[in-house]
Image (cartoon, rainbow, N blue to C red; front, side):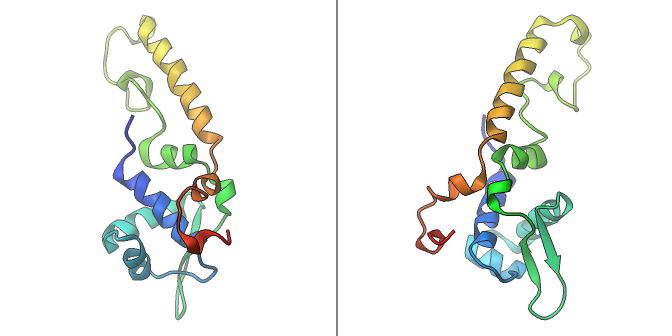
Amino acid sequence: MKLSVQTRYAVRILFELAATAAPLAIGDLSEKTGISPRAVEKICAKLRYDGISTGIVGPGGGIRLQVPLGDISLGRLIDLFEDGVQFEVCCGDKANDCPNQRDCENRAVWRKVSAEIQKNLDAIPLDSLLRHYGIARFDRL
């Protein structure tokens, strides 16, 4: 399984937001992460929609975390940006039109595997990943 660019970028953005108490403008986040301003804006919109971050308008405004990194799991981000873990197209919300869906034994197996992996990813808080990020400015978190 490979995570999308959006999910990987979201993790980087969240790490940067966690590193500062002040709100960060889209341009500042773009500069710090090396991600285009347009991509940062799209990702931040999804994070705001999910209640992970919030936007502050006006002078000194920008984006800031709404919840601590320890309360955000990798599984939550995968749900948000990938529609969860699904090993078969017929298992997810975007199921294909396979005529064997109701009695397919493979589908049940892959659904179980997907659910177990999602459960494990839900147990990985982002702050535990941050410890492995290796940037000195994050040591205080």
